[in-house]
Image (cartoon, rainbow, N blue to C red; front, top):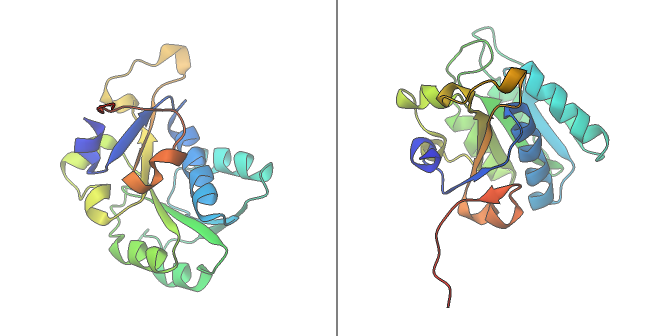
Length: 183
C-alpha cells in the first residue's frame, strides 16, 4: 500500500519513527554515493534535523542547510550554488514544516544532474491531493506514519517509513516487504 501511495518501487518496515527514517535516508545516500555531505532544506521538520545531526556527528558526514524563500519554499538558487561533487543527497519536505506545498521538480532535476540522491519528507495523508514522490522522481521518500492509524504507544515509538527506488534496495535499512520466486 505504501508503494501505491507514494509511487515508489520498494518500501520497508522497522523504522523507529519519522525522524529516524530521515536519518537512515541520509545514511543510505552517503553509502550509495560514497560522499560525505548532505544539503537539507530549512523546511524539513526540526525534530528530523536534530536526529540527522546526531547520526551525522558520529559518522563524519557534513550537514549544510538550504534557506527558505520569503514564500516559505526551498531556495533552489541556493541549492544550485551549494551542489558540488561532495554532496551525497538533498533533503526537502512537502508539505514542509510550515505547511507550504513545495514544487520541487527543479530541485530534483538539479540534484540528479549532480549524481546525488533526492530525499523527500512527506505526510502520507497529503498524498491523496499532491504529486507523489514517484511522480517527482525522488530517490527516497520517508516520514511519520502515525497519521495512518498507528496508536501512540504511550508516547512512542510510532511508525517511520521509507520508500526507495529499485536501484537502492540492497542498501535499505530494515526489512523489505515483497514477493519473489526462488529457483
